[in-house]
Image (cartoon, rainbow, N blue to C red; front, side, top):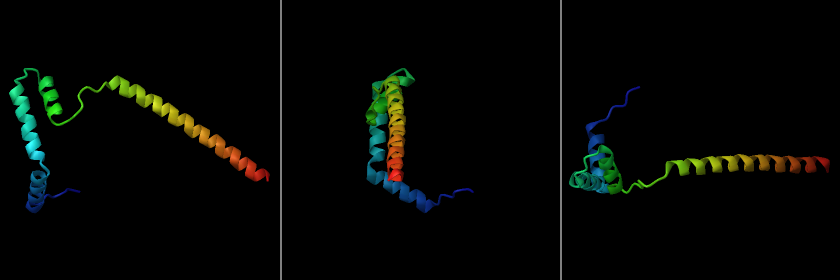
Length: 95
């Protein structure tokens, strides 16, 4: 299945992007990258991300560790819920 984009759809999208201010933000971000005269591509990308409001000082390892910790806690809590539900069901059946 192929999706066809009509000229009317393109025009609607163009107007939406203009109204939202996305073009102005992109132009400002790209101008900052250009003005920074960074030689490294990575630094240029970092400048662009900062201009777009992206937090570039994220510690990926810490985020991964936090994610793993929360995933384990979620598993433990689900297991506790199952145990408590089993106890409730057992008590209901005993009555």
